Length: 144
Image 1 (cartoon, one colour):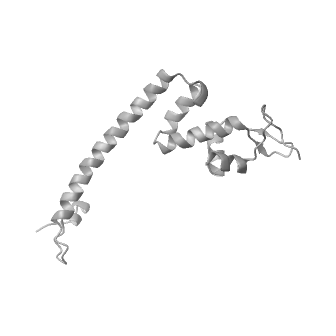
Image 2 (spheres, helix red, strand yellow):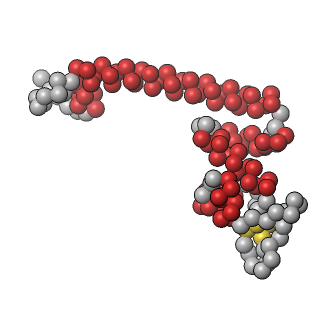
Image 3 (cartoon, rainbow, N blue to C red):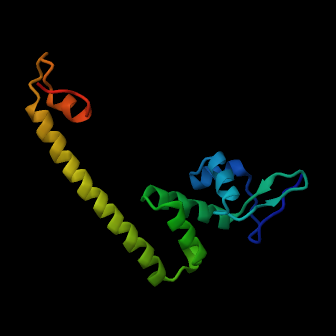
């Protein structure tokens, strides 16, 4: 069966789209179900057919996820026009909020690192049941 081609004449199967975008097939189907990706055209036999626009959108979603953006934040950027037409000022608001969240998480991780480093340093590495690491991990642990 001959595939329907996109406006640029390119026709991609879901497998080829997966290879080009770096997004696995099940995730592509998931993004279609949750409307992050437009419903694709189909061949007469029912196979999904994609083009360069879908490849670009999926690569955008994948990279955004790698940078920690939530699906809600990505959906908002796509609603603004996606990688081609989204106004920078609107994307800036979303990215700034995400940056603040990342900085908060970094701060929390730095505190966690300090507590864990201090606790590990206190650990005697012996066979004694008195272990500061276990004390902070097991809230029900009784220290005598």
